Amino acid sequence: AVFEATVTAPVNIAVIKYWGKRDSTLILPTNSSLSVTLSQDHLRTRTTIRASPTFDRDRLWLNGAEEDVSASKRLVNAITTARRLRAEVEKQQTDAVPLSQWPVHVSSENNFPTAAGLASSASGYAALVSALAALFELPQSASELSRVARVGSGSACRSMFGGFVAWQAGVAADGSDSLAVQVADHTHWPELQALILVVSDRKKTVSSTAGMQTTVETSALFPERVRAVVPGRMEAMQKAIAERDFATFAALTMQDSNQFHAVCLDTYPPISYMNDTSRSIAALVHAFNAAVGRTAAAYTYDAGPNAVIYALESDMRDLVELFAYCFPRAEDTAPDAFYPNPLGLF
Ligand code: DP6
Image (cartoon, rainbow, N blue to C red; front, top):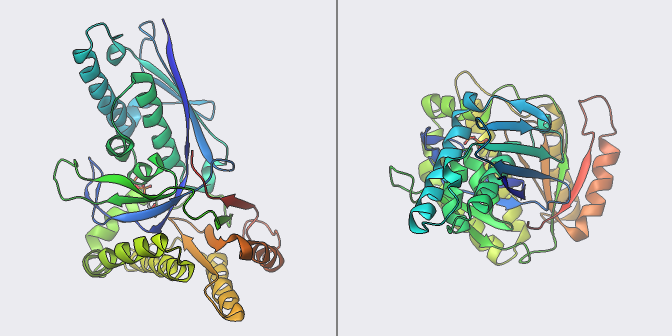
């Protein structure tokens, strides 16, 4: 017998950044964060899981190439956690198929280049956990399942929902209150769009996991961000989203990206994820906003040089033209791909 489930999961881009852990095994963050889930038309992970008593061990294929499952503690943790939930189902339904005992074969594919550093771990772990939940017929809600995705990669918990999603940091040592909640669904603000400017598709030099650990250990500015800045921004951002107040949403997004990159520079040794092209794009966004006399566009950068631009649909055409004009394709020092992404959900 072979039991099988296939799901897809979307990418999310944080507008209030997660950076720093208080527990690196359970992946518990030092601060809450908030993200926008992108439509799956352009960026998504599709994962198929098969379970069978005839398989001899758990195996994983990423974009067709086999990976060593046992080498990834996080992957093992996520699968083990899902199996524990399945075992509860089997205890309650004595005629349930003993899927929790069977090895699984996981096959996962992205419809975008993994190397481009476009949040592939977020959609990847969200897809893994959603596929396990479907296969195991788990009764848990998306928020409860987000705790399982979280132990794979922190930002993955936010990809369990479409629309606008908050990851509540929580205070419990066991991680029970560190989960994702949907702030508004994908129909709430259909005019909001995201544009991804691929500045470089080289693999990042310092991984998020390693970088945030060094920041927690060495940055003097970081505790101030966590204590005095992020809580107020989480509130203000949720209000801006509720009111569809783009100017406030955009200003908070840019300020939070800038502060995240400032604490990276304050890390010792310093980490710089943005390059000259990234900084030129940020300057161009500010110049555009000044020229039109309102905050019409926002940029945000994760742990790499690629820019994500947020704007309303009515301004996006002008922005795409402007970026294409100012950054004509030239090796990998200029943005070489544009992906207009109307927001949406799974
Ligand atoms: C800069 O979720 O990749 O993208 O929990 O160690 O897997 P781990 O880190 P990860 O970090 C993402 C950091 C970020 C900001 C964000 O997405 O909030």
